[in-house]
Image (cartoon, rainbow, N blue to C red; front, side):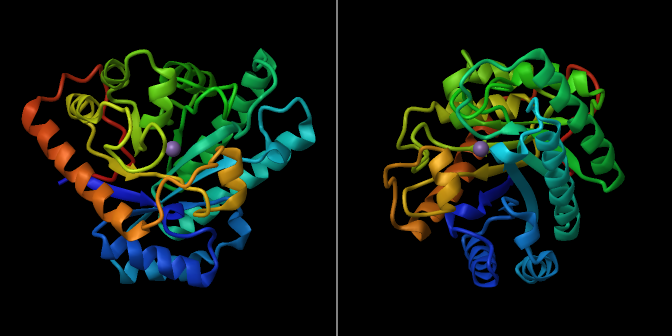
Length: 304
Ligand code: MN
């Protein structure tokens, strides 16, 4: 059985005590193993209370965030960079307190439409901060994942290849790739080939349709996607992500250009997505064998 996760913003818009309880209960009721908790405002999260809720419901947490423009570690403004590093450190502390062994997302830049290409200085500044963050994460037993996102959401890392080059620049080779089918579908020429090529470096996976609605209702070739994950020998969590107008955090929805209502019945969406991932993973694992590793152990955030 694969480890199947769901992004909390499928169920709620924020992380009040009531929302935390509702997200944890819904994820558990639909049979998910992992709940991805977004750390948009780490200070606003009562990590102790959420950790207890997760334990009561037998769920594991994974955490993620995307930096706001005012805390962009790829900025030319040193104050902005240091705000970003503080935010990442706070998020790491909350991840530890939630018992999360993985923190991913857009950790390396703001999540926004940039007006021009990233400079080498932006790349180097961000890599330096992420290298330090990886050192602190290692001390807490947390694996970092960098999520390449499409060109409208960052100018720094749009493909897995760029992420691997960036990871090499940080000097922290235990940083992993956090892949997302939605972004790969836009930026990778050959999605399945890319997944096979990145084997051994994949720490976390988001599945997300081409329009971010119901899995199977868009244009992504998911059977090829899941077969490639099986060939890559990926054993980590596979987490469902979707966005619809009126659901989830309104600020995040604006930065992701969520203008249309892709679904209204969240329970039906969560149930069908979980079943889709389970069926597709089982079919893929039956159809293909893992390829040999390019070397070194598979880093999969310990979530086998
Ligand atoms: Mn994603």
